[in-house]
Image 1 (tube, rainbow, N blue to C red):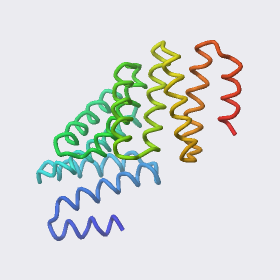
Image 2: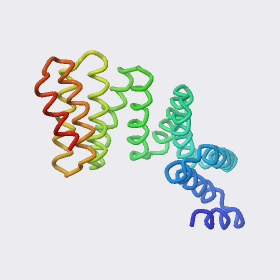
Image 3: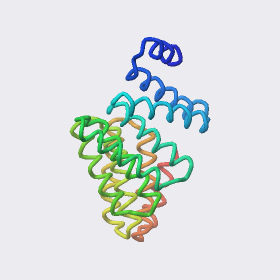
Length: 208
């Protein structure tokens, strides 16, 4: 479907649609085909089209996908740069969902880079944004990132609080994946704070 859309957009000279189709194909290359080279080629085309046509929304989407690609290539510096450009574009063009998405993604990048204060700041901003949008799944996910950043920066009690909030929210919405993610971070924070018995109970419950 996306290939047909891409062909039609190219033939009818609609660069905005062409850029959107290329980004969708890039996501399929990432998630379904696990083809990094195809993903890179598609995104390079999308970036060129978005820049040439002045498609700022398409440019933001492409920058976000390039950030994801950079992370798969283990290039955290490039991932951060693309993510920050995507975030700036989302702010400039009034896209609150994209602002939240990019904040959440940047928190992951900063966690992997060991920049825990930045990771917590992005995760907290993402949690607030998702709460305002009513996206409780991603609100809980952002709380998990907050917990991870706090625990790894030497503040396990604060990590416990965020992880418990994430777990409770995931239980409310019956999100099993969210409960497992929250349990992992809660168990680690409890372990770091010396609560070994509860850490074991949480870890066992989260693995079921």
